[in-house]
Length: 528
View 1 (tube, one colour):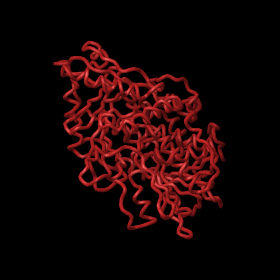
View 2 (tube, rainbow, N blue to C red):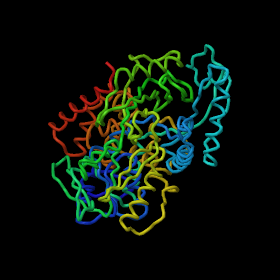
View 3 (cartoon, rainbow, N blue to C red):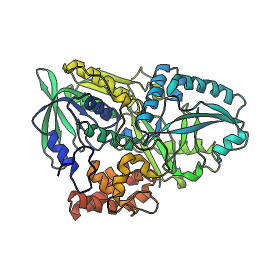
View 4 (cartoon, rainbow, N blue to C red):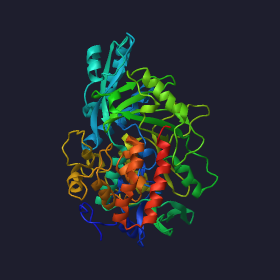
């Protein structure tokens, strides 16, 4: 049974089957977007809200890659300001303000403390952060300010006290990255767009030397399908070169992938109401300790990698570096035994001159159009996803000769955004107006695991409304169990899989295979 966009699915419905049927209708799409992360979803929403016919294909699941593995910040990038990239910071701060307005259920203000242990540190960083405030303009969150030692410890009681002079408090945004991806999916569907996950593109279609579509495989049936479009956008993040090679096997790579690792620990290590920002680590990066879903995310690293992988793994030395740096500022400091989960993400950094460190590469987004018309979007970050989409659709519309239409996304409230503009510790906040519909489903009062905040009803909702197809889809991205507590998520997997089987009509063999696959994947998030 088909559920109309925006209609709460209070009954079982195979949402993805409806999407597959729509994706394989005999039509020419205005825009085909390959990739279901921040850049792809942002591009698809931008196009759909302009009235273009849009199809998005994702090879695994929405935000499976880099887009679910961020530091969970909607920010201008203090580090980029230090590098002198003022235009990127100004753009990102502007987009930060828009995103808070358009998705108040997902984005909230968070104070960040830069602790000063040297007499010069507070005035030095204070001047830079005043510029940060000024660049944000009328969309600034709150003004940065100096805090003395007592005020710093009131906000972050576990800061090391010895030699602490005080610090600078500034404000940025925080969000749930994978939940924003799913919110964009719902927004896309509300505006008539079609998206399909577990549908890898296996080849591009060329007619008269021009790229006019793609072939994709439905992973659930093994069947291949052809789709045609007036413009094709390659928004596959760290995998854009793989798609570019489908057009030209000899094309030079665009990217220098870099890995960023985070560890997740209990909230007791940062019990105050602020995050900590370390402005310069031993390797010249910044490091954050950020409260998130009643846990603390600490990271990140910057490790150049020769090639991208679908499921990157943290290196032992990266985890050691994070814990060592955290121990310089926190008392008590987390140890390996305290890590609930460790995750790694890959940055799609555009290649620079030989010998350039990846931490020095620009985070600006880049759009390139091949001789055959393939539009590749890469680089950028979550904060600027909307602007990335706007720029890409402008280029695509011009290339394909689509009717020119104004962008509407700067003022577009995202799905569920009618929720009150307040931050709640309650995990239901991320659903916005959908929360009441989920709480009306069976299992709304039945926890999945005593160490996780989630309920059985959320699994049903994920299957009915959010195209969740596997235990990983649910436990990693619809819920954030894998990142919050990997061991607990493994223990919850059998029940999650049983509910999915009931919702999707799967048999016992499928359930067993799902549980085994999830255990193998999640074991990589556990520190042994």
